[in-house]
Amino acid sequence: MTKLLLRAARGESVPHTPVWFMRQAGRSLPEYRELRAGIGMLESCRRPDLVCEITLQPVRRHKVDAAILYSDIVVPLQAAGIDLDIVAGTGPVVASPVRTMADVTATRPLEAGDVTFVTEAIRLLLAELGSTALIGFAGAPFTLASYLIEGGPSRHHVLTKALMYGAPDVWHALCERLADITRTFLQVQIDAGVDAIQLFDSWAGALSEADYRRFVLPHSRAVLSSLSGCPRIHFGVGTSELLPAMAEADADVVGVDWRTPLDVATSRVPGRPLQGNLDPCVLLAPWEVVAAEARRVLAEGSKAPGHIFNLGHGVLPETDPDVLTRLVELIHSTE
Ligand code: CP3
Image 1: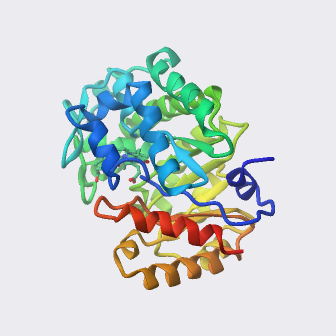
Image 2 (image 1 turned 30 degrees about the horizontal axis):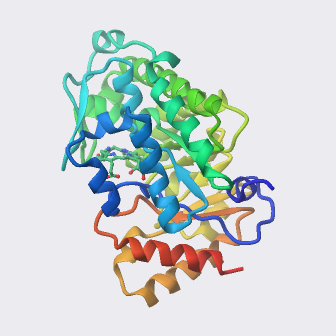
């Protein structure tokens, strides 16, 4: 029997809507915080036993239809030799930001041999997961470039855009390098046996459609079009105006944040299965509100050729995990 997530991703009929949550591992789970005590984030990503256990935690607890490999978008960058760390309470921090052609030239491609810990973690996971799908992922060139250029998290991506507009040759050279690293990282995960992949372009919504098409789409398409054999999900935040362009980047499934109702989203990308899009903040409201909003998302999602239920962005750390468990039950019991 084909895994439910794959059937929905191909627009085939399903007995109930499959559901998983972006950032479902970690964050809100006490068993995750316990396991991570005293272990750095990036160190935990390089240990297959920990990756396997942390990836499985939300599957056991919530009975979601998919696991997402525990990792981070900066893991392949570090594996390719870029000096960076993940600082608690901040996020990724890059030792020497990349801002000139010489900085770009100093980076190197990722080799499959740099990330054997990922292959090993996926091997361990496939032995445990049964009918639950395993999703691999990577960051898209724009979102990765933002961290490398800014040197860390950024609100308005000012330096990123200044480089994009002011030095397009450096911009495109950097994105070509990042597309290559991302392609290799996703191919390693596909070769190891993941069921689907998701390309996170979390911050692409900072761009106009024209700029997205000119500066980003060719690079994201270069990543997705080079991969085959499993569904490719393409997700960003604040991308209502970018949905058609993101679909054109060779995406099989388009991820939608909470700003665009799924019945509207499907009219923008006809024929494309959708993933989304409950506002993660709704999970902090009383249960009746959560249930009503989830039913609305299901009804709107039923207008698309296929629907994978998810949040519109990641689970917030303050979310009560029991609400997630109850939400999965609700999705599974709704026809
Ligand atoms: O949230 C997204 O938009 C998804 C894409 C994304 C990930 N990491 C995927 C991820 C982004 C934009 C990042 C960067 C990042 N890494 C941030 C955001 C900083 C900012 O700019 O606002 C942060 C805080 C990190 C560090 C990080 N990544 C931690 C501390 C953890 C473990 C616990 C937690 O908070 O979730 C991660 C894990 C991580 N990053 C996962 C993914 C898909 C795996 C966990 C999961 O999916 O459940």
